[in-house]
Image 1 (spheres, rainbow, N blue to C red):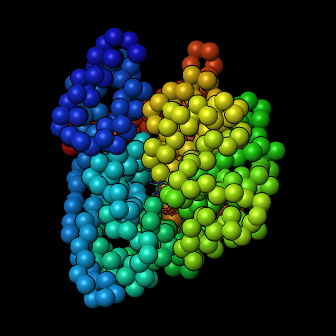
Image 2: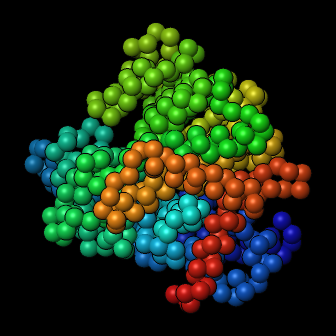
Image 3: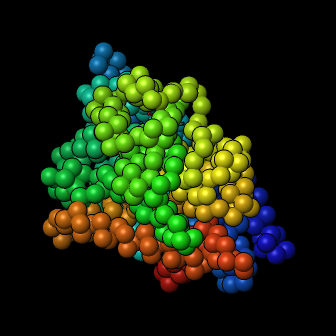
Length: 451
Ligand code: NDP
Ligand code: 2IT
């Protein structure tokens, strides 16, 4: 970075940290964007005068609320609910809800900030938001999850709407939780609208929404590989996570001719050198989605596999790595191991899974590396397509949705290349994604005056 861009960035970060103390994940997300856009901003000084990035980093509104509910023993439980309404420059607030004990304001703000850039990249008219709760759905009965969701939505319903803010799923929030929340929203409002996405197929959901994040991540990786005349065919793929994103990333990687050898959860990972084929993947889906079991059970069922407790899959030899679990799940040591083992491509399905040290190593080695805000945008993009279908009161075919998803991922890839290609031809997808997304949001904000 040139000196005055560096000076601008340093002063910006010092101010942001002072105003938002201890919000480490939020600081990390802002710093990454800042490093990409600071040179552009200092070349366009009106952006400094108008404090455009300061405004983007300040949520339009943060709602924090009490969520009281009764467990199956009749005991009172209290959780904390959040909705960060980050930016509405290009459309209604849009983004998922996360239910996980680690949820706090920093995590909500980092996710909402990332969402601003991701949604801008999708080419669709969606602003950005994120929400959730420190509620832990693990080990809870369906009835407990329902009571929690109903209480959560009783408050959240006052702040959302199909033209205001449209939540969806994220960690710990899948079809079951969206169903309970939608039911309560409809009951409170007495209207059937597309206020939540990720709905069931028979009640307003879009074909391919469950698949979209994982499929889209593979489509993006395919586009990156194509720039080097390469493909998934015959490649070995390491995936982390075994939830929504990981499951469908695995399925698409298989369909594209790759061998998937790992999946994980927060307790450990399984390594299956024979490959997780369609049948084994179906077992993982039932295990996680219906029985809510642990990935360890895979190794008990399939003797070809080994389970590694409290370890991450990045030490396994692979060509392509797809982190699909959570933030900061792949650090500098993991990146060094992947590179030493010959990994050529890292496509993020999760939000901010690689630490800054890991990203630096990938980029120094000039391997293909895409940040989540670019490669996992297929999920929210398909949520945008669900909103469209709800508005026109029609349901598209899976083929139609897949065509849109393909086009959107190709467009995001192209935007990254346009703004991220460096002098030697290497595509810095972080820089490309951040600058392309920033320009669109910044232009919209300036056109709409000081709001
Ligand atoms: P799920 O809840 O379906 O699955 C999450 C997976 O990640 C589980 O296997 C879970 O294991 C694992 N995991 C969660 N927290 C941790 C942790 N602290 N350490 C290790 N593993 C962990 O969530 P999704 O698949 O929907 O989300 C995964 C990632 O993708 C998140 O970063 C999310 O923000 C991102 N994302 C999701 C989109 C979507 O459409 N759902 C869209 C774009 C991004 P365990 O069962 O042990 O908790
Ligand atoms: O991080 C994300 O993009 C999501 N969790 C999906 C958001 C959405 O509105 O579909």
